Image (cartoon, rainbow, N blue to C red; front, top):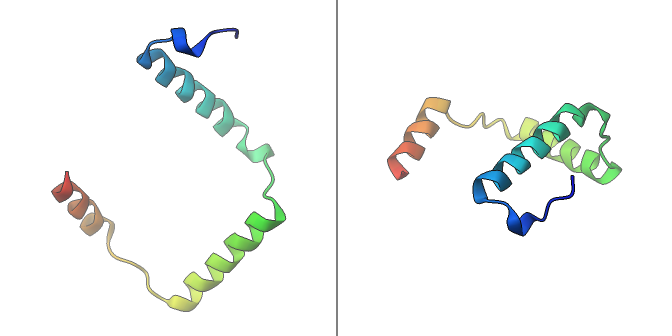
Length: 69
């Protein structure tokens, strides 16, 4: 694809990003975590398991978000 981004409409740019994201999503299984990212995720999971705070119900969170809109 040899398109000048400045020549695309906003709608076309959004569609291009969506298409790009979909293609990345399809190939995500091929991606490997870096050792740093894996270590960070492991630390966060350990912290979550130690904390014991399960958060709050989804319906409550959605309700709060809707109130702010």
